[in-house]
Image (cartoon, rainbow, N blue to C red; front, side, top):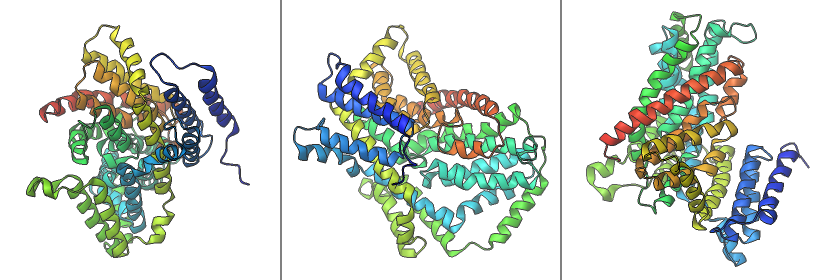
Length: 488
């Protein structure tokens, strides 16, 4: 039996916490025993995820099993297993799973690399231009790559490394600061921003949509188009600032890069004319964006609106029928199936914590503590978002962080008088932007940090600086933009 995926100490800590909450710590007044016991399982699950006791999918299976066996959601065993598996019926979960499979086509056809080299061929005469080329490449492929790790670490980072190496910049030779140090930081800090710009740009975003809908009784249901439009202006401003801010803090030794343009052009020439698969991918990409943005409904009326998840299945179907992706490709996309499993477990637990009244109780505790400070809702929201954001120093998973804190902090903000959609969009943005902080903040960070171009000290300094810049832009520029759009 292979046990290398199991870390005993974090697993024992998780079990200890579950038993502590279940048998030792009494449920507070206003919280039912079932709600408290589900909280015990929930906290144990989050701790196991943070400590990486097992792969997150395996942890999710254990969580589903425990919810079914303990009967914390239902008195009947058949009701309990139905509740435990209810997350799999959530369409947003399948949206992300299918979108991850679709994004496999970017790598298989080479379209992702072509996009990257194309932008470098346009803007690559100066180092800062390469920075913007990497940023634009990320932005273009973000709507159809729900794995920010695959996007930033699997597609953009190899391109960044090849450019740095072509200029003789490598950690092994001690020449990182020539250009690689700068490009690695830009490569990374664009990733959280593009993740914040689309529901389909990182896996936990649909969970946020679900939590906001649950907290508002579905009176606020953020669509793909609403999210994209809301994030458009603050996202573009942040993207415009990243290469400049990094350049100001850690300027590269090589400022002019005329050879980069030629290098990118040679790579494009090596790839040859656009192949059949790439053309189909572009067509599917365009189809998804048009339908996700609700263009047919805008032109022809609400009767022509198409469900977001149905659109994702349509895109996958086209790729299968056209032969760009095979069924074998679909089966091999382990990250998609993994995401469907762990996402379903977390959505299920979050849903029942809300239904059993635990989220309302905890948000009341948060609200009363902030309310005692005597500030108006605007200042209270700044405190709330700041605490939520910088708590990510203690998390190695955005999913775990969002699952643990988002619902309660959102409900607390509502109780403090914050406009519901404004607060939801601000916390949603913060949920991705917080990935900028550390070298373990999300899956992309250890890939880029592990390439050795940036020291830990430089990484954390740049992370804090960008956190202030990004939060300020999302709060101020985003807030004003949402006011113009009539969102609050």
